[in-house]
Image (cartoon, rainbow, N blue to C red; front, side, top):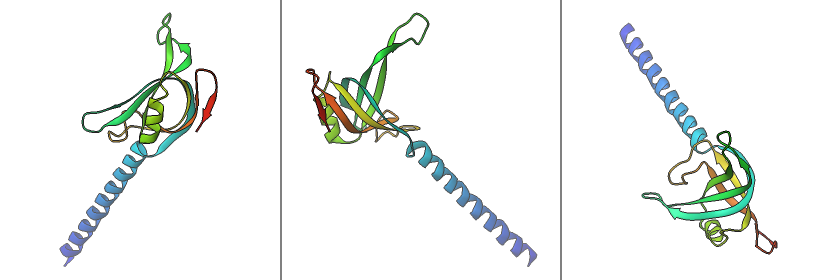
Length: 139
């Protein structure tokens, strides 16, 4: 009789323990891969947007920002913002805007997931595209 109670109590403990581990892992993965850590707008000259990937095809791009930084003393390097785009319409518009000055709204995640892109920065809208004659085309 006493061993039956002990067995049921141990089984209940392990059930609760495993449920807490599963919930904890779910929260961890949600925060690490789906929680929006930050949002903002970056502007600069659009270098490229490409559609690439082996298993998961994603849109990847690079924005060259004005200014310089040195990773090592004496070295000069431009600021580069590498990003992914999940919306095909936005990616198509950016592909046609290569070399133009653009302002992009993005969301930042802690880590990327393969089907969303290679970058932790996901562009979700175009704020503006500035043509070479300095006219601004709002979104």
